[in-house]
Length: 245
Image 1 (tube, rainbow, N blue to C red):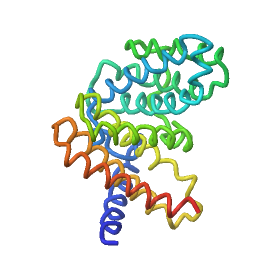
Image 2: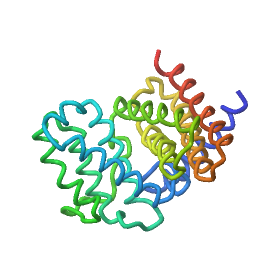
Image 3: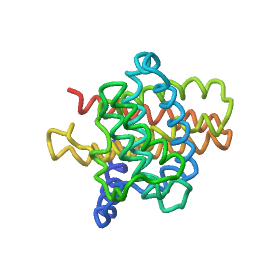
Image 4: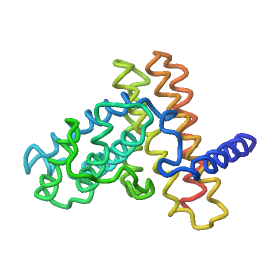
């Protein structure tokens, strides 16, 4: 209970601070570095490109496309707002728009039509002039976010048992931390407004735990990485138990 009270206090401080500014509800430089976000964007882009290599590949991976594209939209927005510069910062809004179109697509043809915008953005080239400002609550839907979180958590469990490449392995924790920021913003699952601080507190706790896990993985501190991961997953369980009734 004391941990929840501490998290609630931290969440209220963050809410007050970030309500003064448009943009992400949590400090993005505390979530991950811009370079880590670029690495995730490029890796996700390569993954999605494989899904769209042919109509057959699309059919085999259609259920993975929406969660992957939804995360890529969040990454694009994070890159555009991140206080650190990166080679994809200027193209972040275009990456967001293209990825959201991919997430909304319902056929191979629609997905292929959305792909060039994403591909150009991943090369650092903006398409059109989409605004940097965007509502974080509308970047992704809850279901694909949860699917991506679950997928990355499963992969993280495996790599924590047998670490291989810290830079690659840490991206799974970074992805969950970033999706926690979007989850913080999207409170439509909270039916009683009085429970909103709890939703925010658990989102903050998940982000902090997973960001800490990612840093520990990069430092090759597997014990700490695993400890933070387990604590983060416990946060998910508490939130689900409270709101999925």
